Image (tube, rainbow, N blue to C red; front, top):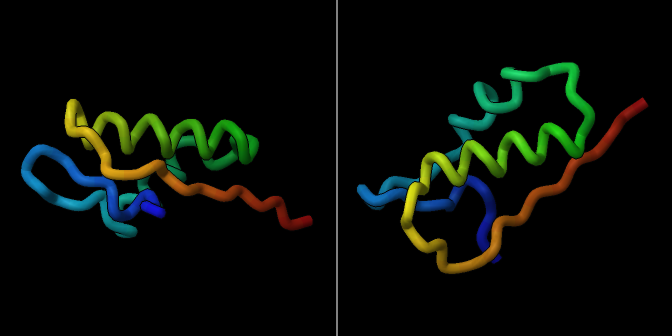
Length: 64
């Protein structure tokens, strides 16, 4: 399984964990589903036309 940080772009760079805080903080009040959609969109933009070797794995948890 491939996680978000391992997504690759055309320069063979990985998305990496360091990109996640900026992505998540764009809409900090968003519901978990929207946050995951935003992360998926950011990964798609990062990867461009590069075919990923596996699916992306994401999990959203609400703590109350």
